[in-house]
Length: 231
Image (cartoon, rainbow, N blue to C red; front, side, top):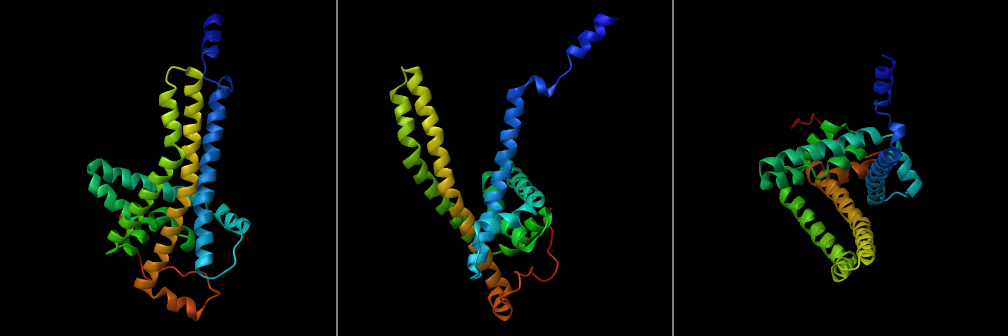
């Protein structure tokens, strides 16, 4: 009986027995938090600059800190909605992505929850999915060009050094670095374009420019009326 109990105890899964797994989980959490801060901080900074206000990096990140939870929910729900549409067909997935393009600015600037932010984006982009698709197209072209510039040369080096294992690992690591550099340089372009597109839609549909002229010191007001839900 004692032997059986000891074997069962030894067979239990303990997280401390897998330091590599712990390190991976910590890195994943850090990467997610950093991604959320980069998304929200860029949105806030572009918003303040668009409104003609002074903004600092610390100030933008401080505003993100209190909104990390629902920002994470918005991004996850947005990804699930687009993935669900892509499972049906590619074209519906692209269309849904275009209609939900401004859900993050809606969440950050208007302080809306995940479902409400997606519904708000769906309403704002009604009739403007074509403009949203052009933003995605231009971003895709820039991203491809950046990868060709920063990652492709290292990929070619990896292919030419196929017989040298050490050289292959070196070129593979450099390819990963080049890919990350390209992403860091191009991702803010999409966020900036998305933020400006958000305000452009509000000017066209809600006369936001007139509202701001009447009260420049006030925060950007949410759209009037209830927002129909798409979920």
